Image (cartoon, rainbow, N blue to C red; front, top):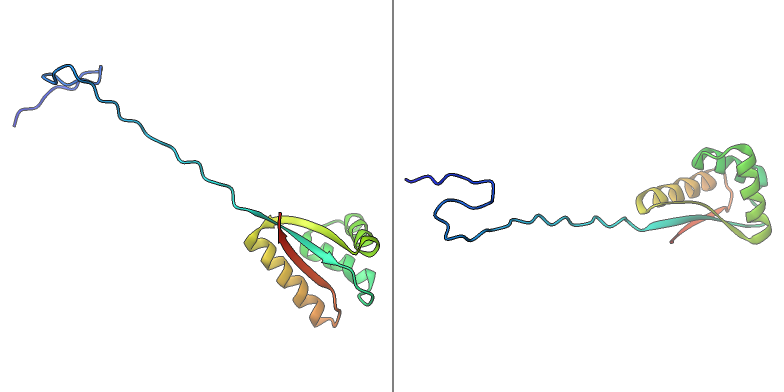
Length: 113
């Protein structure tokens, strides 16, 4: 077995003057789609309960939760946060389960941004 020395030019000795270039392609990872989590207004769920849900499941301060609750009350719905699919789905399930356990008809949905 004959070994050819590696030259810095990318050529090996006895290669008839041809050079080969190895390129490495990088694929860009696409960001996953995001989903808006929204609370819907109803005529039965107490405002204090909505504030509590926003603080507990979305980590909002009392003032932030109160503002969003008022938006839900006045406009019929409000976006509470934007998350990946799995996180949004979990938040919706947590809110719906919590509202059901406390016998409130509060609705929480998600939609692709």
